[in-house]
Amino acid sequence: MPSTDAWTLLRSLFDAAVAAADPALCVPSNLPARPRGRTIVVGAGKAAAAMAVAVEAHWPWPLEGVVVTRVGHGAPTRRIRVVEAGHPVPDEAGAEAARDILAMMHGLTSDDLVIGLISGGGSALLTLPAGGVTLADKQAVNRALLKSGARIGEMNAVRKHLSAIKGGRLAAAAAPARFVSLVISDVPGDDLSVIASGPTVADPSTLEDARAVLARYRIDVAGRIAAHLADPANETPKPGDPRLARTENHLIATPWDALAAAASKAREAGYAPLILGDAIEGEARECGVVHAGVALSAARHGAPAAPPCVLISGGETTVTVRGRGRGGRNVEFLLSLALALDGQAGIFGLAADTDGIDGTEDNAGAFLGPDTLARARALGLDPRARLDDNDGYSVFAALGDILVTGPTRTNVNDFRAILIDAPPVDRTAVTPSAASAHRAPTPRRDPG
Image (cartoon, rainbow, N blue to C red; front, side, top):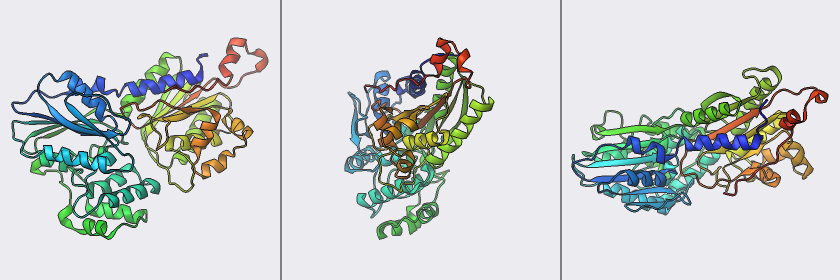
């Protein structure tokens, strides 16, 4: 049985997943040919700055542009201006950047080229309220959606219909120029119209869909928003819109790419990987229970995978906020997983956001081991009560099991890996080297 330190292996799987979506690797080979006219680069998302750096490094001809990324996710550039703005709640910096980006689309000709750099997080970062809607209105709706438990596609249906730039409107504004959008996916199913609310993609959702989402989650909105969503003139560009005829959208990195890279790394270490899926959604705590059931079946029965193995999954869970604790969807998933595993020997886990930030805290995610619950209780913490208060961060921080990486400058959604060592054996027959493989390893924190 492999004797690899569990924490070290799990961290290496996460690193492999992130590396598979590194803009330095996936942007250059997807750049279009040089146009006869001007080249404009625009973009939004947590990977936007790193993508801009990659474009500059491989585009020797003249270009100009603006991209907007999350505060702390910037990178030094020479020709493309990088703006840092608020996320997950939009702010004035993002609105100003969106105005600048939209202004650059005016007056373009059929000889010109626009390169779009789109990644997860762009929905909040590329904010430009439409009509009579104000930034404060959008901030209030965004906060309510984030707490509601709504899925990313539902949230973005609302965002697109309150925006002057998303839902295909950015590409429409660039016509008749050619628009080539390079997209790093962070959404389940890689739906281009959902990633960053699809600023360069015809929008299949409708004003009626947006109103239905607000009703479904009982979100009260300002009268200006209700009036805007009731006006048919505010519908987004739809498939077949002639303004989008010269727009191309190319997926250059996806959650599946990341999971496949992690699976390959696990195989090299002697663990059989089983990818459970790259588009798992639902409440984080419920997903934790389901993942625990699969892990326990593997540990006890050797199915659906026989130990030593690693269960790997991606997607984007949600958290319906009911408490007042510090959390994020990945630590909420892990705390629920720990409670469901109930100290089962030989099972370790990691859950983290590939952008390096789990929610609004300073961590990417956290580690879990067979002793997580016992150690938490020894510190006077009640794991069940902490989960009820959406306070997973406080538990794992107290244990020293928080994973801090800093911004990765890419984003292919959440990454989860559950390592299952061989089933328990007769301890009297275990050699020292084999026993070491069952011993709970010392948690490690990245210096960040």
